[in-house]
Image: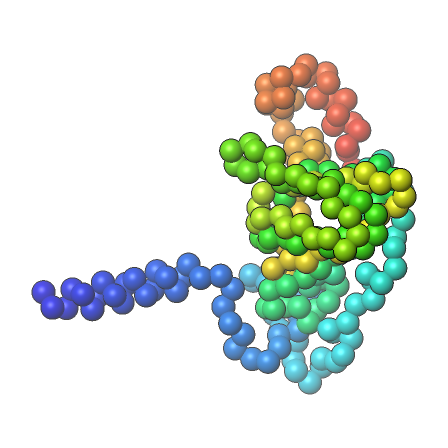
Length: 217
């Protein structure tokens, strides 16, 4: 019987260990080998003799990128695909530029929480809890807002000039699911009758939305 507590504690330690987030690094760095054909959770490491400063550098967030789309927003990611040195570090960033009235539409990041810092302009931002409660606020230059991991959220430029924000994530590759695109431009497509019943609209309207959101060829 005395063996039972030890066995229980050992099992508990295994369960708690298995439920942890990203493990600690086992080496100084693990620069992603993006060209490797090996598939795993993350990216395999480049040999240390082949890495350099550029593996940890990215200039893509320095200047605004002006949106030229129907949403009026443009996201520039600075994740592990752009900065291989982020592999296994659990962090990444992005820059979002907004035209007047531009919207970063409702979307989620399944693998990360997000913190947004307004560089220029004024935004209306918000997220939705799983109880369908909207938590929203107007934020301006120099202010910060946080979006919890996995929750649906959005931003809109409510100012009279262009706006920009820098966002940070606690993941090297947070993932993004835009709700409208996911539902109406999936491949293979979601049956029209499913979307029709979900949104309480006619199937013909579903088809119109699908045509509008279809990837440009």
